[in-house]
Length: 106
Image 1 (tube, rainbow, N blue to C red):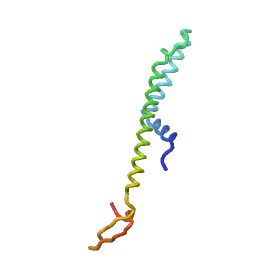
Image 2: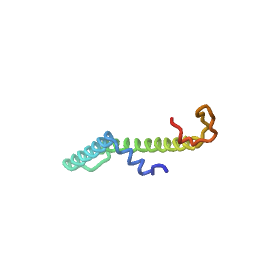
Image 3: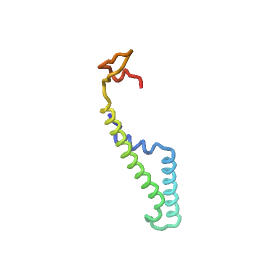
């Protein structure tokens, strides 16, 4: 059985660089909030462009990562299905017709 969707999503954020970018987005958002509070201006989207762009990039990265990882798992399962369970082998000069493929050494 493969990894669940949410486990794949969480795995995408379990990377040191991603964690650094998440911290940078939070710090940038906090700076924007403090600037708005100091100046008394209205909160606008322009004040939060940097943290929003960082978060957008991280979300897109997670989407691509989940897509690639789920495709890789499907490909691995397809390869396992193609692997034969029995093999014909040559042992001590004699051909053995039915031998478990698991018993063979790669």
